[in-house]
Length: 114
Image (cartoon, rainbow, N blue to C red):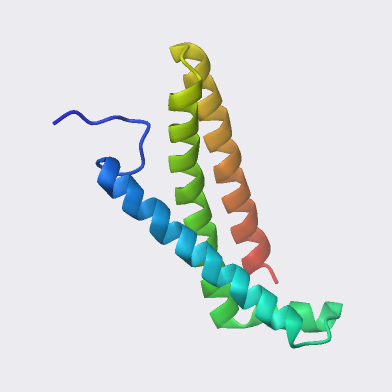
């Protein structure tokens, strides 16, 4: 069995399932945030208290990890489809994946420093 280093999963089916599962987690997180905003009069202190809840922090962590998985697979698929030069594709994939990891790391630092 041939393994491709650029994919997150072990096969196309595995990537497909990971992509759909991460999208569902991100959708649930967005609905969670929209629900909070829709039913509350938001100010700084309420928003800060909302993110100090352990449930919100854990859900935010799941959303950040889902964002990383979704971005990693999406970056690989798009670059593989549209960038034919191996060196350019590898460079872009490396840079964009580094940006995704920086976003997740920043999110974790911000989230747990509240």
